[in-house]
Image 1 (cartoon, helix red, strand yellow):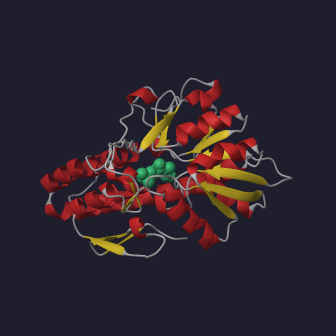
Image 2 (cartoon, helix red, strand yellow):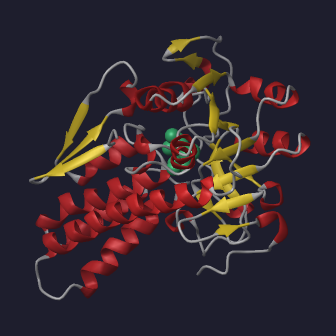
Image 3 (cartoon, helix red, strand yellow):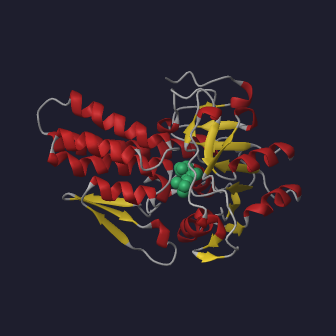
Amino acid sequence: MIKPFSYKDGIFSILDQRQLPHEEVWIACTTAERVADAIKTLAVRGAPAIGIAAAYGLALAAPLGRGALEEAAGILLRSRPTAVNLEWALRRVLAAVNSYPGDDLSRAVLLEAQEIWEEEIRANEAMATLGAGLFPDGRRYAVLTHCNAGSLATGGMGTAIGVIRRLHEQGKLERVYMDETRPLLQGARITAYEMKSDGIPATLITDNMAGWLMKLGRIDAVIVGADRIAKNLDAANKIGTYSLAVLADAHHIPFYIAAPKSTFDPYTATGEDIVIEERDEHEVRCFKGVPCAPDVPAFNPAFDVAPHELITAIITQEKIFTPGSSAGTGMS
Ligand code: MRU
């Protein structure tokens, strides 16, 4: 399975996802600032992956001492606002440092970063199995996904894509339809790349085709990842997710979210409280860097929020929530 990053001897190497699928270019990071820049510019992206990358960013700062570690945490935290995994991982590493028996700061940080990554890998596996269980045996299903919630977004087998991989292993997947995911094409560039490498039957569509495919009866379920899930189970994910939730509801198709516990934010009450990242207008005016519109104002929210009442189920590594029928997680 392709990995979004690796660590060896003080170097955290990030596969530059902006170059995919054409080139596999690795960025060798030796400072937390370099990791923060890679997160900000989407060289590494996807909620769990940016959490893990931030933890390794701290591992690069740790040899410089406690002051540098705290400064690095601030820089990493400011790199992107919407995915809670980033803040969660930073808090977790800093807490581990405080409770580490001994004074080897670098070792304490590195061990915690490794543990976070390993936990995400295990969470993906558990989610895949639980999620595939939502699809009764005895037939194959066509599912629609958006953006990329696969290996390159998680460091493991993926959240939504993990469920899709498990369905495929179990002989229950007819086909995955992949939204291209404008403006930055994570679906076309990254999900399609992962599906092709795995030999999973997959068809690329433009975002505006999803409703028509549902109308034609060609989609059995929608399954996507999440960047932050509020206490009431409203879920932020890549822009376009809200539209899919509304369309799925209108066509009586289940709308599933797969996300690890690190994506649940116990401090945010509802989706209205989630900060939505706004990115540069040129991403909308251009297509793969080439201008496709005159110089008019463009609006570029990177995420939107699916309200909990439109979410049929949220699959985590431990249990499945059914937000349409319950008021919150009980997670704190
Ligand atoms: O802007 P991106 O590419 O970081 O957005 C990623 C998504 O929206 C993913 O669906 C989400 O992070 C879940 S990844 C398991």
